[in-house]
Image (cartoon, rainbow, N blue to C red):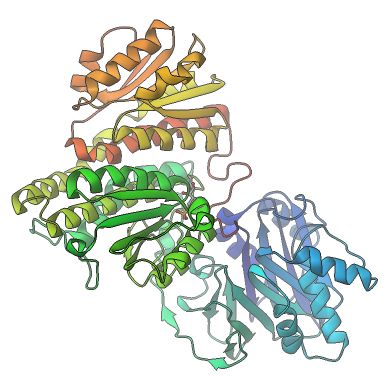
Length: 607
Ligand code: F6R
């Protein structure tokens, strides 16, 4: 949700800002802008649409200066117009912002009553206006910003630049992440370490409420009470080279193809070489002391949790509740004693999931998170975080993070089963052996690409698509439908196969493709019956199954996608690949923007 960057450099800063914004574009791409100070003069350039429009503008209308801030926007308040694009400016102050200022109506009314006029419809403009007013009262920039911050409620990460100040950026964080980068005689500010990766690997993460006075000499950090605080400088290991498409047409294609490799890395992290059990880091929960698991997440991560519910209940005999974070946080559910609260988030910054975690902090016996970004807010605030080792995921539609989440959650379920005596060591060893075979099964699934592309060609002409699955395939059907709608804009819905006859069967006709995800498992016969119900009404079935399943399914199938056979419990991880590829190839056939689908952003740091 909006990416922000700031640089106090020794070279022309505009190209550096644009390069950093490129790495943040996954957070939003409605408009972009930069501001610099050059010979004391504050100026800015902004453009609607993708970052490339800003780059083009800067070619014709360059912006000199060695100090600057930049922004890539995902619109919240106000349409994506140039006027609403950041940086926002009032007099001597320019500001970039990620988040939402919740009391903006009240502040706007107050300023309007004082005769202030507004140039934008945004909440962010207020920050510049208030700070400029405080400076007009005689306050220095830092004091003026601090006084403004004390008036703001909501979530924000902010960076401010000032006319006449070539060596100053003021940054602040509350609710939205912000990192300070340390260079050689240069200093940086960024929404995350990825943005700053080519500039520095030495990062200080601001804590909740922190305010930072950044100059080329370093950073002075004050907490929300104004006390000087020391935040550690961390050496970040970011494989910058992995943030490219490596010959693929899209990041999404690359990230789908990477799954055998990253899942092998996730397995290596929790399955010691040659061992036959799961070993989690010190301090991980002892599931024999837990009676109930509450899992909370959003979107794709929520579907990973729904899948894991089947595993924890069936394999570890542990009752599980799964909730969407935005519902959980406001429902204020009672949390029973001996409950483990588990939060799953790729970014580790999703506002609703973070709020749910905070709700549970003093209620659950223990907290645990499963994240892709170990330095993220959710990882830090949960105390114990299990990284999923997916590597940087750039495509806005989550793919490899989903399968890595599933892999780590399955291992966690095995650990729970072992702790609770629900599985014998031999049974755990069998599962571990099956897990070790996953990367090669995933490679075989990827080999089905051409068949999937063919099915996707036909799917791309559909207006609506239905996904069906039973048992472990039900959450995956939900994920398949989400993937398809978010990148191809085709309306897609998913149902548990058994629910078909309770309503959605009314939709079936000769125009309706129905993707049936059904490995040849204990529920297969029932899935075939549901499939027959679709075929009888002339629905077009795309069956994703294994060799045996496809052979048994009979005639009349529109398209069959063949998966290798794996242990039934692991099918969701494997069958995620055809679901992702189906969405990917459909989107490519339709010519949509696969990596940056409309209206979406990757890190959802607003409610
Ligand atoms: C869909 C997708 C989203 C995210 C959701 C949660 O492809 O990526 O649904 O899964 O916004 O994000 P995280 O996992 O970062 O909390």
